[in-house]
Structure formats: structure tokens, C-alpha cells
Image (cartoon, rainbow, N blue to C red; front, top):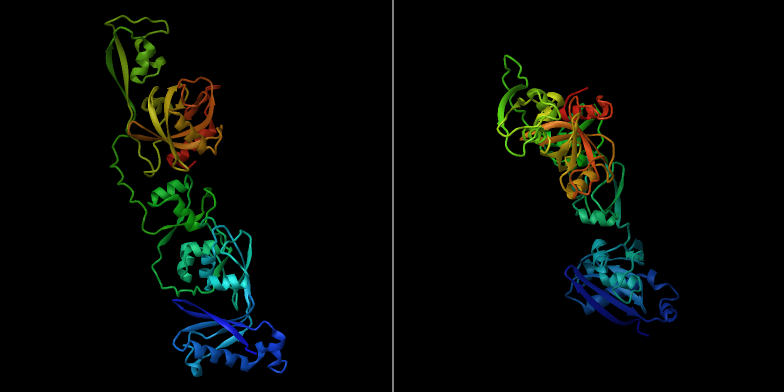
Amino acid sequence: MALILRHELQCEPEGCTVIIHIDPLITEFSKEFDGCNPLENKSFIELIQCYVKENFPDLNIKLVKIMIGSVVIASVSFSGIVAGDVTNTSSSYSQTSYTSYTVISGDTLWLIANKFKTTIIELKELNNLVSDSLLMGQVLKIPSAAPAYTTYKVTSGDSLYIISKRFNVSISTIKTLNNLTTETINIGQILKIPVTAAPVPPTPTPDTTSNYTVVSGDTLWVIATRFKTTISNIRELNHLDSDMLFVGQVLKVPAGSEQTPAPAPAPAPIPQEPSISYITHKVVSGDNPWNLSIKYGIPLAELLKVNGFTQSTMLNIGQEVKIPVHNIPIKPTPGPQYGERLDWWTEAQYVFAINKTAKIIDFATGKSFYIKRTTGAFHADCEPLTASDAAAMKQIWGGAYSWTTRAVIVEVAGRRIAGSISSMPHDVQTILDNDFNGHFDLHFYNSTRHKDNLIDPYHQKQINIAAGIAE
């Protein structure tokens, strides 16, 4: 009887596969070899080689599959030698072996075939698939004599980019093989690496990082600004999973990127101090002490005292009112990321007067929003300028308003002032369309609480952080 019933030929750029169908009456088939299993008989291998030589003398045959019905019972690899040159053919023959692979979201037969260096036809035949459809969680047999991947343990300084270059494989391949949804990896994590990925010998390169020791007042935002980089880059370099830092902690930072400190101003013979001068305002219709204090950014009590007025004083048109003008010198800071530490009573309340708007920058994250000072005597009572500013403020506190104090930079009148904020809305509300029911407290150096006119130590600690001043 004829052992080979028919054959099929499937060619791809890398070579051709011959599929040979043999008689399913395996019992009769075995008798022709004196009862031996043909899959263990050298003559059977030679028969297959001769068959290929005679039928495909000029083709590059990579693989021969032997099938009974729809089942692949064996494969013969020709290792890329042209089949017509049988005398030089090094064929390795073994029954099909395989590993298992679980289908994940986005997988197709084409992607899996490419990942494991096989063909769609081979995958379908080995798994008895009648269509190209796959299901998540479906377990496929992958033709392979060895595992489809090796493993690699993540070490300090590794990133997916570094590992992909080391093994000459794409980041997306590593993510897919390890079911990663982000590029975050951890020291000690075990990653699967395709066996086809060979490590690339490292070449010596100049160290692109230097070490930086955290000091009091440092945050990731402060350090990123100082070294002209980003918070995410520092996190990746140091495998940080939070924004928390501690004094003495050693961080890797981009080498040679530190900002050159601005030249220190020449020391003045006499330290500059706030000073007061006076101008005269001539009263017009509608003027009163309160609106004049708002107009000139002067506390009402001060305006009354300077002019000898009381709360009940009525102004006359043409009357001259003495207006204090406070000259507040700019104070130096330890670095460009910090704010001036201005005393509330003699400095800050005049720079950030009632009705002024300011940009608030959260010192730890660098996130910002806009506010307006609506009132306040012992400290600044403020409100978010718009609903979007209120939403941005809320997110900085983790999605809920809180009495927790945070260090901030107050940008106003071209200056950066160190401050501290708690975000809980309370009491009087002036801006009615900002989705913020009340006002919040903004403290400056030496400002006090309304309830007892005492300094709040929690706010003062945050102010010192924003000013870069060690306690």
C-alpha cells in the first residue's frame, strides 16, 4: 500500500513547509516495518528525505510535517538546507513537543506566531483550530523544544528601556509577555524575556547620574527644579513609588544639570527694612474709610489710626485723607524654587492685600490654582477664583478638602512668597460661583489664628519649608 497519500506545500519568506499525509491505517503501516513504530525507524526518515528531494529539488525546505488525518504526529527539520542536497542535509527528527501559552487581550494568531517564531498554520494544526478566532484565557500549545522565554531579575537602576536594549527586544514585547500595563518595574521583580533575545554586551558609557543627599525642606518638585529635570524622571531613576523623602536620603539625579545659583547680591551696608511713606487722597462722592482701605491695600484699622478716624467717621467731599504706602524690599531666598519669608504684620499683608488675586503653587507637587484674598486681618482669608480652581485645589489634597496644612508658593505682584494653606471651606463666602462653600486660610510668617490670635505651629512649619529655612 502507498504510505504517502498526498502532500501540501506552504512557503514563507524564510522557507517552505511540506505537509505529508500518510495512510491512517497505522496498523497496516506498521506491518511494513516489521511491527516497528515508523516514527522510530531510520528508513522512514530516509523515505521522507527522498520524497522531498524528488518532489521539491529546488526549494528551500525548512520543515516537514507528517500527519495522520488532522493530527500532526511528527516533524522533520531540515535546518535551512536545500532539500535537493540530501547528502548534506542535517535533519533532526522528533515527535512534536510544545509549551503552553494563555491568550491575553489583544492577542491574535499572527501576534502569537511572531512572538514564538512559528507560523499560523502550525499553531492551528497543533491546536486543532478551524478558525483564526481566539478567546481570552484560552490555552494554546506552542511548538517548541524549549521554553519560549527565559527570566531576568530586575536590579537597581533598571528600567524597561534599559532591559529592552540589553536583550535587543522591544519594550512592547516585554510588556506583553509579562502582562504589564505600565512601564513601572520593581527591584527583584522577575521578568520573562523571549529566548530569541540575546543580551547585548554592555559598552562602557560615562555615568549620566550623580548623587544628591536630601536636606530639610526638599521635595521632589524642589529637586527636579534644581536639577532641570522632571519629578517622574527622578522617580524612575530611584525606583520611588511615592513622593515621600527623608533627610539624608541619597538620590540619583541627572549629572551636570544643577542650576547655577544666581550670584549673591552685594551686601548692603545697612540691611533693608520695610519703610512707610505717605500720599494724600482727596475724597470724592461715594468714598468711605472701608473702600479707601481696599483701594489702597491698607488695613482699615491702620487707615483709621493714621487719620485719627473712628468707625463712625463720615468723610466729606474734598477732604484730604492720609494714605500709608508700605515699601517692602525683596528678600533673598536659598534658591529659585523657594519663596520669600515675609512677616505678615509688616510685609505680607501689604504685598497680598484684600481683593488681590494670586497664583498658588503647591510646593510638594508643583500643581497650581488661582485664588483671591477676600478678607482677613490675622491671616489672609481666601477663596478659589473659579470652580476649576476649586477642583484643582481639591485634587492636591487627595480629592477631599482638609484642615491638613501644605507648603505653598504665593505668586503675586511679580513676587514669590512662602505660605501655608489648609483647604477646608468654612464661614463667610464672597465668590458665589466657584463651587467652594466658604473661604480657606492662607498663613504667612508670624500670622495668627482668628479664634485666639495665636501663631499656628503647623502652618509655620510649612511656611519654613516653602522658604527653604531649616527649623
